[in-house]
Image (cartoon, rainbow, N blue to C red; front, side, top):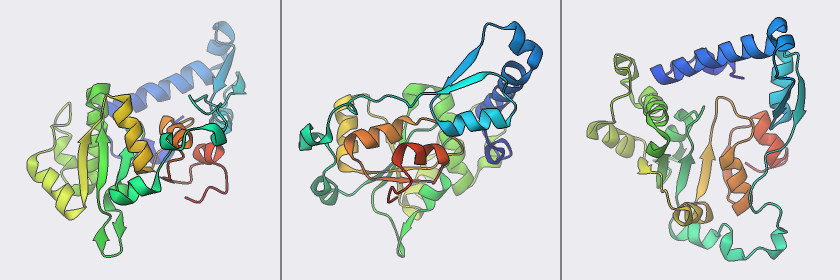
Length: 239
C-alpha cells in the first residue's frame, strides 16, 4: 500500500511502472468484490498492524492477520549473546560511519543533506545494491539526482545512467556522502552493523529487514517515525 507522498513524487521510470502495478493489484485483487468472492485468495497475512489498517482503510474485504516478521537471532536472550557479536561503541568511535542501507521505497534526501553543525557528518555512506538488479540502482540513482540535480534530464532514458564522476564528486565534497557497493559477504555486512550507525527514511514500509538487523545487533538506528517502524522499535526508542 503506497502513500500519496510517494504516488505523487517524481520517480524513475522503473518505480513509476511499479506504482502502476501496485495500484492495479490493490484495486483489482483486494477491493473488487466480484474478484474477491470468485478467487482462491481468502485471507491476507501482513507483517505490521499499520499495513493491516491501511488495507482496511482502502476497503479491502479480505480477512487480515498480522504476524510480526521473524528474524534470526532474536530468539536468543540478549544476556547470553557474545558481546563481540553486537554493536561496539569502541569500534564506532575508532572509525565513525553512518550507513544508509536498502533501496525499496527509500527516501534519500534527508540523509544526503544531513549535517553535523556547520560540517557534513563524517563518513556518510550509501550502500548500493547492484546485485538486486537494475531496478534497485535505478531508484537509488534517481533519488540521489533529486538532491544533487539532473533528475529531469535523466527521465529521457528508460534506465538511469550511472552517476558520472562529476556527480559523485558533488555528492562527496558538497554533501560529504560516499557511495559504497553492497558487500555480498555476510561477515563483512555484519561488521558494518557492529561498528556503524544506520540511517533509514522511507516513503512506506511494513516489516523492514534493516530495522530487524539493527535490533539483532543492537545497532543504533536513525529512523523516521513511520508507524510500522515504531511498532518494531517501540514508541520510546530514542531515535
